[in-house]
Amino acid sequence: MKKFKLDRKQLILTVAAMFVLYAVMSVLTYFFYMSGFMMMPWEIVRFLGVNLLLVAVFAIYLYCADIEVLKDIKQLIALCALMVFGLAVYLCLDKWLSPFVVPYAFIALTCGLIISRKSGFISSLIVVLMMFFAQAFSEMTVTSYIPLFVGVTSSILSSYTLSSQNKRINYIAVAGLLAVLTCASNLILTMAVSEQVNILTLIIYSLVSGVISVMLFLFTVPVLDSIFNFITDFRLDELTATDAPLMKKMFEEAPGTFNHCLTVANYTEACASAIGANTHLARAAAYYHDIGKLKNPLYFKENQMDGHNPHDEITPELSTALIKKHVSNGMLIAKEYHLPEKVAVFITEHHGTMPIQFFYSKAQKYTDGRLDDTGFRYDGPTPTSKIAAILMICDSSEAALRALSVDNRMKAEQIVGNIINDRLKYKQFDNCDITMQELNIIKETIVSVYIGISHKRIAYPDQKKEDESIA
Image 1 (cartoon, one colour):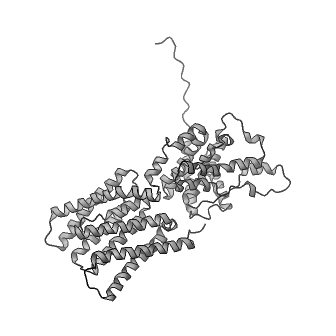
Image 2: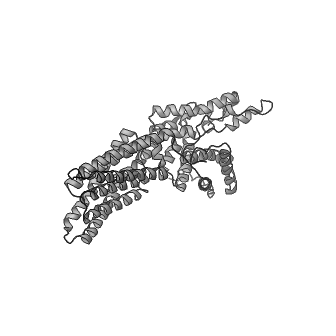
Image 3: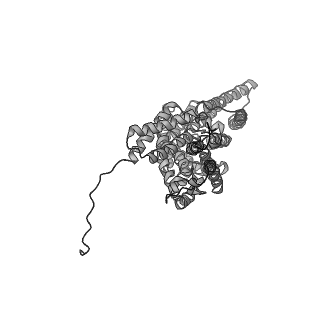
């Protein structure tokens, strides 16, 4: 398994995006802070050099800590646009109202929801530092350090208080908490560096800062969501409601697959939580990974309620083609129902390029010698994310554990371990950054969930039928 890197196209787009971000933010800070000052050429070079260093640090951090943003050009453009917009708002409020009104939590809150917490932290921090250094080249005073400290504090707190938030009201509560913390920081630092402090004004400004953060957050998220077709945790929760259109259709037309998806979702969500992946995306991936079975549902075992198996009447080659077809059918259905690309990708990746072993073995019985398994493999691609790898393992594990009716932990561990080893053998995890330690955690989590689902209940004695004559 190799670490994911940027290809040439992604690298060029990243450099271009960083250059544009650097140019626009430099122009903005120069216009607001230094356009009225006579600056020597070497001072302008220093100013541009500091900004270049900040943008370089920003790019390096993303590459090392959150490379998924650089791989997805839509996320990168949205992040840069959010930083420019946030900087413009900050500068306007700082210049024409007060530095204490600046909603420093806005960028981290918004980016933390639509992209990632890591990107939210670093983008907010870079914007605050760029403002501070721009002031340093113009009219630096001791009170200039107050917005710097408050901005850095807000960046950290607003980024890392979002990890457990999955309701909109919680984000508003976080912003309210940040307003209180901002107020406390402003008061403490202002009293430390200045003898004249208007406490009431500081409190009002700090609370206004929190309100503006919330208002900008609530305005910007749906705008970016609609422009870039992002998929937030809120939207994922809507997709995983059992009354979602595709879920209702699956329940009515392929009830066995519907129940299989619900069970796999329990496994996948638990595994994602265990290794720190996005549980909302993991559940959505499991819900929709088999929607292609809505076409010809009776060719899949879980939907054969009457015991009749149409595969008994056709060749293994035709059976393989029909089974593989559920992947391409799934993508067609995903497109028809406008399923987000971030969820639809799991339809093609959850089987990777694994062979369809049952029909391959069946076909071998009709041939002399060893049969090439190329025609009995899924078309791929192999998983490109940890969640896709989790789904691949959970999908097969759920089917195997249910089919074999395993009744003890040791046997369950052996089955799940064999499933993981088979996928390692066929190099299914070479294009994702999952580790051996995480694979072991996934195995233990699946077994624990299975034991919890399949636990035995107390056998109650038959209740005697009450005498019908009793009223």
